[in-house]
Structures are given as C-alpha cells and as structure tokens.
Image (cartoon, rainbow, N blue to C red; front, side):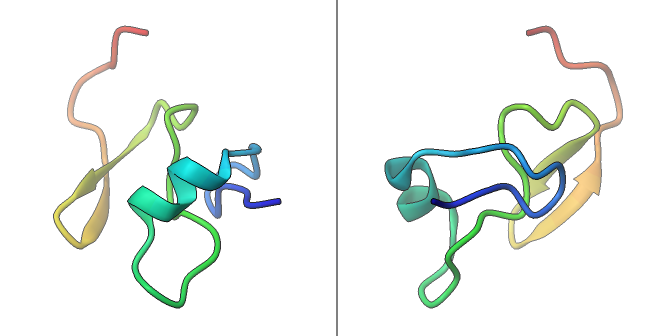
Length: 52
C-alpha cells in the first residue's frame, strides 16, 4: 500500500501512480499534508493556509 513520505497517510494506488515519478512507489506529499505543497519537481512549505 502506498503511503505519503511526509505524513505517513495512506494514499490510493491511483493517486500514487499520478503524483509520483517513475520508479518511486510513495508520493512525497498528499492531500492530507496541510503544510506542504508540490511546486513543480520540488516540495515546499505552503505560503498560506489551505482551505479544506
């Protein structure tokens, strides 16, 4: 089962397939990570709060 490298939350196989590069099984961040966002190939701290 894939899980987020940042928070350890479970993610679906479909999410991991879309948001990870080839050869990587676990995404770096997931929708549960309120303090991190994907910025191109990098992960950065969110500049503002995310409304969820």
